Image (cartoon, rainbow, N blue to C red):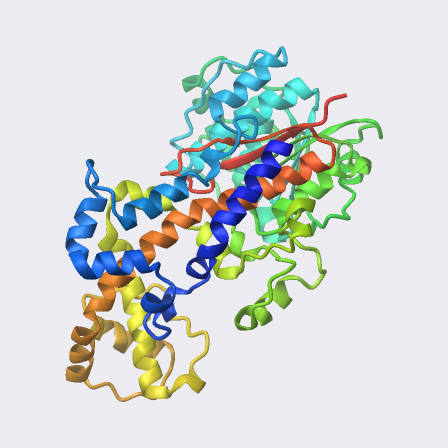
Length: 496
């Protein structure tokens, strides 16, 4: 724990001077003159001296010549998740090695889910289901509670493939019902999936094979007097808004009629905002009888942050946090410092820097951002600062061949009474084209900081668990970041 606390303090010292970059919204890049006010002076001077074309070609080169931009990006790597102690952060194989060191031999099986779901979801569900199954078998937990179960892919797979009792909990009734329908559909495919997979145990019930087309899968069950393999038996869904005060054990005991000493696994695949930290708080509460936790968070911009006060986002933050239950920071270490990130910094942490740095496609990534920043300048000139608020135009830029076309569509969407002069717009675009090159630099800096901020949020959660006396807790990189940007799971086990 001391190593983790020390590293977090080191990251905070590094990050603080750069938080103005992370908290600067690209919409205001030109109107607030971010190039002069927040971009590091050495990077400004390098760009002005050598030009963006030379600096970018060097940046993407396999044999980089060290300069201010490459140095900035390199320095962020010394403060992202890979820089934390190996006992705190590890790859998927290392997580299984931990399991082996405890004396458990992981299952040797694989799935083929391509015919049922998209590549991203297939990858996430297959990897996480196996990991949850292996750790749960070691922990001796037969009942798994899936918080924020959504469409139910993970829950139904754990019930069908690994024979666990699974309780899916979602705050939206439409998701609970959707999970039920998708599970029925999943069962249709399960026999063919199983034939293509290796070393899976026999199911407790034989899933139905649907050979005819009916309006609903329920009609099939009724017509042929067949039973679902898992629905209503080993896989159940309930609609419940989960808070840190929810009695998870009571919900599981009620649904599966187990005794009050039964211990459970709590999982969450992409728990949104502060729901991730709610799961941690539930895990540490003794009355919930939770022995194992596997949680992958997402949507950091929706976290309720305790010490941040940003007037621009006040209405949103207040609406999110009616219950005054904060999701960041949660560790005593960061709370004692009253550490602040800010909504835009958390939004930054939700980006996909691995995809960007792998593709090296800066044009496709930044053109929509430049159009939006330039539109803001145009709106300020036409309407004045006092009449500009949070104007949401959506994803228009990719549908527009020119900035001129973008302005017309944006003004129409915003329902503004502005007379557009096409010649003026074209001249306006040419005038500010230099800002596009500068915005590209700004974008690279934010992408580099994204992984530092995400690491800080995740490790704050991990330190919270250690502070609660849960020693067997670590972060593992489960998924391919090019497929699934939010790919880090917090795994924690209460050992007797």
